[in-house]
Image (cartoon, one colour):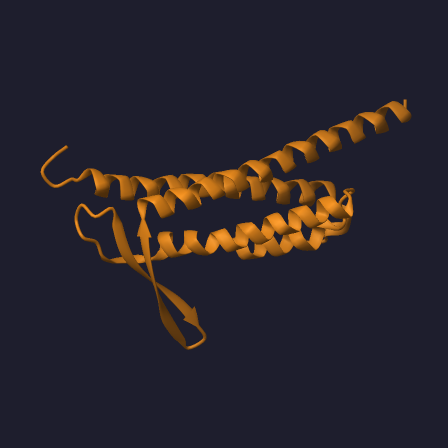
Length: 171
């Protein structure tokens, strides 16, 4: 380690990097869910493009979940999961889109400000982050990503079995 680095600072910035990587995995889970719905419910989904922004992705999934062959309990579970993703995304946005305005070297924490725009104005949202807080949110995002990817795996397996049954019936 050179004279300008500090283990606490390295840990803080590594935690931020880990959060970025984990959110990539989480969004992969969301994107595979959207892809499944978009491809398999083409006759219902009447939307030419897949959404790109997280807020629109969540809205898309909420809208189309009820068209899927799953129980009310399963649908409610995934609606709750999407609520958790939306809530967790706020912290991720604060960290990723926030600007560091105060960072005492070696402290393992930083103060950030995120600008939140409204029509014709903006407000400053201050946030203080620590290594532990970021890693805790990263663990939550990892768990959410796992559940989203499990849904996609199960949905694709269901569709594959449905296709096999259809092919057997038509032979």
